[in-house]
Image 1 (cartoon, rainbow, N blue to C red):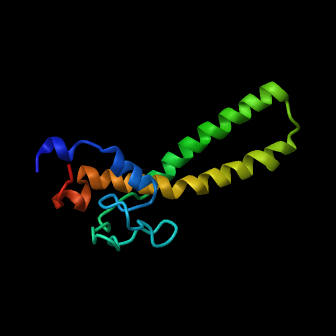
Image 2 (image 1 turned 90 degrees about the horizontal axis):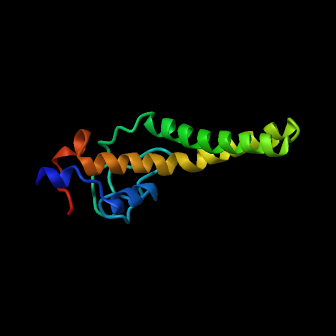
Length: 129
C-alpha cells in the first residue's frame, strides 16, 4: 500500500458515501437506522464500525443549511419585504426539512472520507486503486 494511494480521495468513494452506500463496494446500505452506521456491509463484509463521525456531520449540515436559508431569507426580505409570519410559515420548516434531508448523506460522506483516508480503525485495510 503506497502513501499516495491512501491519501487521495476518489469521487466514487465520496459519491457512494453521500448515497449512503458502502464506500468499498457501493452496493450494501451504510445505515441500519437513520444515523446508525451498520457494523459491516451486508454485501461485501467491509467493517464500518471504525467510523468516528460524532458531531461533525451536524456541524457541516448546519453550515450548509444556514448559508442556504439565511442567504435566501435575506434576499427575500430585501427584494420583497414579506410579512413576518412568513418567517414561521416558510423559513423554519425549510430549515428543518433541509437539515433532516442532508444529515444522513453528509454523515455517509464523512464515513466514506474516513474510510478512504484510512482514519481511525480503517488504517489497516486494503485500499482500492
